[in-house]
Structures are given as structure tokens and as C-alpha cells.
Image 1 (cartoon, rainbow, N blue to C red):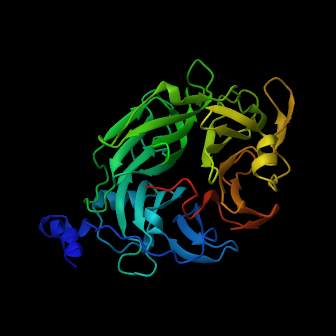
Image 2: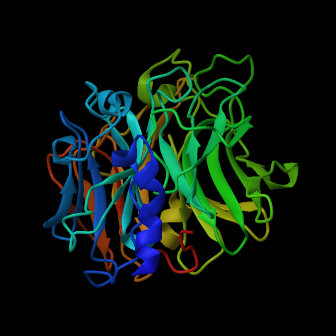
Image 3: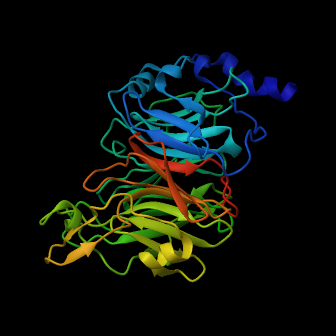
Length: 388
């Protein structure tokens, strides 16, 4: 009782007490593991939803659900004319959802058994600026911190770290605790509890072709120092794909962009990542620091039952060579400990897909049919890869 009162006590004397939301304690999971999936749906307004393997929705959020008082600039970014639902993340043992939603990066409560706290926004960061406008992903760090990938093309793009404690006042532009530059076009971030590192997937140079050199898909590990609460850069944990490719096969001859990474996914119970890029899939072994399988060898070994979602994923590359790219444009995918997996593959020459593929025992079926989707993820901790 006393602890609960003390969590609220500082808010009583703040001029913005309405914006101070106490942290929510973890509650028992409401459904058995690996039935729940979280999906972001593009639209006006965008929609976040948690649903089962049949698509039945158990929880949802859109901005009209917000009843709490918000600072004017946070409110403006939440109700911007943006249809984005770019990222969705399981956080705080399932009592929070992290998302890139409208013009905000936000963390909100997921407490469906407690209507008084459910869907309260506990952290907000406005993307309406030159640094964060294209931010694609976030990831929780220890100590109530959160990492945000800027997803830009300049040398000073990379990762920004913020204090996301629910005890803080909501601010549209909270203080930056750490700025780690050098990795461009970041689309995936994963916390590694065993290795005490944050892993990021991006490119070593500008993916849009604005640098005079090719851009290689790159995975980087940033060691975490628990004594300082800071991440560090270490060249020992920089791993580039062996080749750089343009994406002219899909987008046409002369298209300037290089193939970049889209999702960075740990395999449950293993020290391995699967990573998707514009052309296909790759497997990475953390212990050896090596990319071990590529393209169909990845699906044959780890994703049996994967099927291309459209039959038009082919064309001529810049040299006139015909290519079939059945694994191209996997914007998200997730493997569950029971071996089932989900994925979202954008339409050819489009940026998003219009259903989620679910594969169980090697058999694929569609859910969320008709939704404009960038990412669907399991709503749970992966074995060996717990969130902080």
C-alpha cells in the first residue's frame, strides 16, 4: 500500500501532474503462449491490435481511445495526418506495448483487466523533425530506457536512447541520454540479455545511394555497461553481408537504392539471428560472428513452409540478368518456440503487405486479410531472448 502511494507522491507536486503515470506491475498472461500476435494496421487513424492465430482481436488501440490529458505538442503528433503503424513491440512482461504510431514513438499500458490504466500512454516522442521523421523501430533497454533507430541516411544517423520511465512527465521531445551515430537505415533493434548487448540491423552507408560507395547490409552489436547505463561502439561487433546489391530488379533500371535490412529476428533458444533484406533472408551465428546461410537455405533450415505471397516477384537486374526473388521484402517475421512462424511480405513494388502469413506444421494460411500491414509479431518473450 505504501509503495503504491509513493509511486504517485511526486506527481502531487508537479505542475503537470496529469501527465505523470505510475508504472504498471506485471500481471499474469491472459492467454496461453504463442497464441497472441500484435499487428500494426495503417489507416486514418492507424490501428494496433492483439489477436489470436485466427485473427480474433482481444485488444486494440487507436488514438480516439485516448482519454488522458496530454501536452499540446504530444496531442498534435498523436493526431497528425499520418497513417503510420510501423512498429509494434511486446514490453514489460506484456503490460506495455511499444509502437511507432502516427507521428509518435510511444509506450502505452496493456492492462485489459484494468480499464483505469489500460491504454494510458506512459512515454511519447514526437517524430515531426528532421531526425526522427522516418524512425522505423524501437527496443526497451534495462533501467527503463528505450532505444530508437532514426532510420536515416546521413553519417550522424543511428540510435537515440531515452529514459522511458512511466514516472516521468510526458514530453514531445524528452532529453536524449545517448546518441550513437554511424549505422544508417536502421530497421531492426533487439536486446540480447545473455550477451548484454543491443543489436541493430541497418546499412554501413546511405541506402538511398546518396553516398559514392555501395551500401552493405550490416548487423552491429552495442555492448551495454550496467554500471553507467550506456551502450558502446566496438568494431569487433560489426558484421557486413558479403555483397551489396541494388534493387533494380524490383524497382527498375537506374533505381538508386541499395538492398537494406528490414527485420532482425532471434531464433528461440539459440544464439542465432535471421535477418531479412530487400532481396531475401540470411542467417547469422552470434558465437562465430558469421553469416551461415542465405536465401532458400534459410527457409529450408529454419522456416519450412514459407511460401511467396505473390507470383510476380521477379525481373531483370541492372545488368539484364533475370532474377526470381521469392523472399524479397519481408518487412517482418517472427519464429515461435513451437516452430510456428508469422511473416508480412509487402506487395511487389509496394511498401506494405495486405495480410499476415501464419505457418503451423509447415502449412501456411492468411490472417488479417485486407489490412495494410508493415509488421506482425508474437506478443510474448522468446525463449532465450527476454525483454528487459
